[in-house]
Image (tube, rainbow, N blue to C red; front, side, top):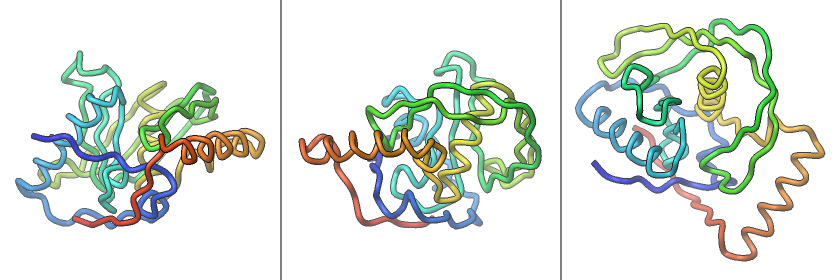
Length: 179
């Protein structure tokens, strides 16, 4: 296993719709393990393939912070099939280090996806897990959480990003790959 490099906004891979995963093999399993290791190392609860420079519809999620193996998920080719309710909560993103803001999301989500073997699954989640599924599915769709902010909050976030870029604390990668 190994740590992967997390790319920062506005890297093009973050703004590109990911390609569906079609090959379910040991390379995919290794990628998922590396993504978990990278996510835990960065103190995240979710990490999508585009965030590590891979334009594919795949993410890993563990809102328990590694304390509950039953809440550790690899979600491949996600499709949101139902949402209900709403929640407003502070949200951050590993591709936007240092940026946190209140974002409105649905409270309950049902997602259909494939697992590491390619089998179809459904997951019904609420609260933080619902927020995470929606956030990471957005990444698979080329949508970043800036798009979910109010215009005022988006302007403030972009100003802070520009300050980070000028200070050298924000690196942008221009290349990406698919699996």
